[in-house]
Amino acid sequence: MFSEVPIDTEKVSKEDLDKEIMRVAIMAEFDAINMYEQMANLTDDEDLRIILLDIAKEEKVHAAMFQTVLMEVDHEYLKVMASYALAKDK
Ligand SMILES: [Fe+2]
Image 1 (spheres, rainbow, N blue to C red):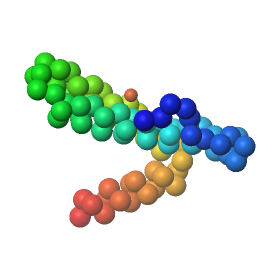
Image 2 (cartoon, rainbow, N blue to C red; image 1 turned 135 degrees about the horizontal axis):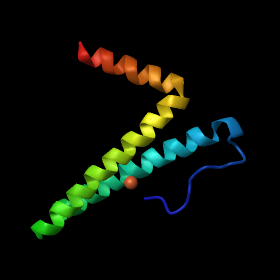
Image 3 (cartoon, rainbow, N blue to C red; image 1 turned 90 degrees about the horizontal axis):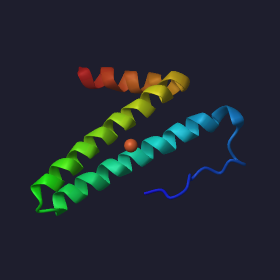
């Protein structure tokens, strides 16, 4: 879990900064998914488990949102994702 943004802005070009922010955001969302799913598995309270799993699902939507906007600006990433998805489909 991040408590501060792990980007060294002195080493990142202005052109790449938003892409790095999106990648860090995706990592944070994936980390949140893991955390909520782990907590859901730890609790014996069914109501709490349902809430945690619902929030984990929302985090997956957030991750998808960041991945979508990243693919809009990082065309190489879009090509890799599309090529891999097509290869997996065979
Ligand atoms: Fe989120």
